[in-house]
Length: 564
Image (cartoon, rainbow, N blue to C red):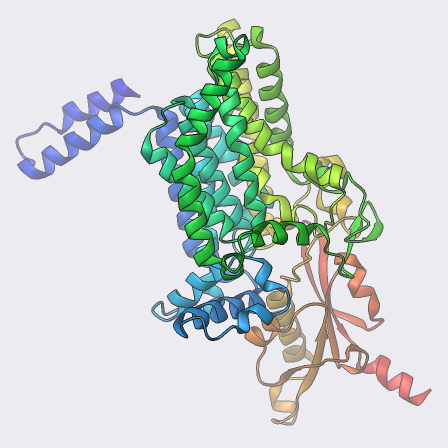
């Protein structure tokens, strides 16, 4: 690539070109010539993702929790505007247990950005998701170089559990992205212990604070600090306990500014945490005690959120992420555990970094399994482990390619071709699922077809806009406007919150609270909600040949019931 760029630079040196244009072109080509091909690929990848976000964010429906989260943001803003007098935010269900950083920023931006507030939230969340992907990419690049970074970025980009949730999981994705960025700065700081660079400490503190300002689970980042210190201890500390203690103390002291920054951001974004010093700990304990009557499904078995098996989240992780991510993660762990596979000077440094990232990926899952905490909606509350898994994927696949190249270059080329084909297949699958990318499943359960009705699919009922369009098309075909009373209305009931319906529905479609007497019933196939109605199917929302939801006409059924 370098030689080609230099050749092109030579052809530009023509006297006909204006000096300013020629000099800029030469400067640009020299910059390209000096960059690694995979670094350029990473830049292109991020650019493509930003373009996709800007062109598709309006395609995603309002989810069940968004209206209440946005209301929480409004109450936080009111709390500060009233000089702490308006304390309504502490009485909005259990929302006070969450940080409101994303929600309050969305409220403030809504006043100056000419977008529908929910479209704005989706745009913000998706761009933050791209930022989280960039953090994973940068972390993998730090550990194993440009190719590893590029592969990590691609792995996360074609992971439907990340890309599909970027647009409407407006609490989980910002949390995961902030944690991914904090882990990057922690890895950078760990390399310079016991005297990390100030910018890395500040970066870690700021992003840890941002994560805590969204959800208290980000306290995990504080646990990662001593792990990073221990992993980066000099070799002689293993034989000298006094030196080990001194190194740990000196390193911890350097992280104090980061913790102070994080605490300051947290108490501003999460007002309840500022009311008492131990409130963040109380909030964390409260999450473990949640016992709402929320149901979820795993392999066809229905559980309440508090009674799911310990392997619920790990099982969903295995079947929701691309197989290449699983393979790449396993390779990274194998290469770290058996260093003979990595014959390079940086192998020890890489093993330490991989250990830190592996801890960030698997420690939360281990805690969930041991504590037997509540869980529902598949991976939803553990999306923050996906960026570390992507980092491991990039490192593992890169090391495999490097070892193959050292043995036989054609083998390395073939391996890269297989990787490219696998990720391309994942990308094609997401394209075909759009805008329901988050319902993707890998071949371990037979893809979406094998997972349908057995596992969590469209738990946010995001089929609503397309279902309403299907209902409108049915009415236009069977009961044209010209043939019916202009003031006639149809009642519509559905599984899910009404915000998405109200945004899409025209005046002649009215929301009905009681579904048994509604003219039409809209329901996703998730948790078999569609089976609540025996009405006639008049529209189907499907992807990959798998029904995700139905629109049912209940009028004949209701008339028959009345006659009986």
